[in-house]
Image (cartoon, rainbow, N blue to C red; front, side, top):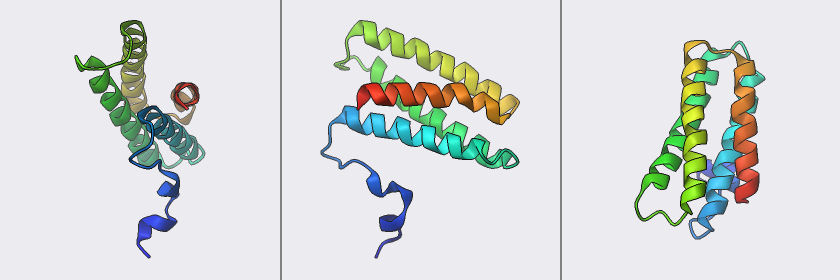
Length: 118
């Protein structure tokens, strides 16, 4: 049996799933990982790795939203791009001074956006 079958990724949406559900799953999964990293406050490398992975996810979201062929309405795109700019700034602050409690806002944002997408 391949190792990924028993991994925490076994609930990854199928490639044929609705893209919104996939994005929602990814955001929820990153919220779960940040929450887990937050529970291990002495593991700063894990905390930083998790925050950087979340930042990459938001960078992908940003790239999709600025694509001229993006089907998302302009008002929603603008709002999510503003939110992602906040996430950029907040993430840089965490990287500069990694404290577990700083993850709270990122976890909350990811959970709320994921809930809206799913």
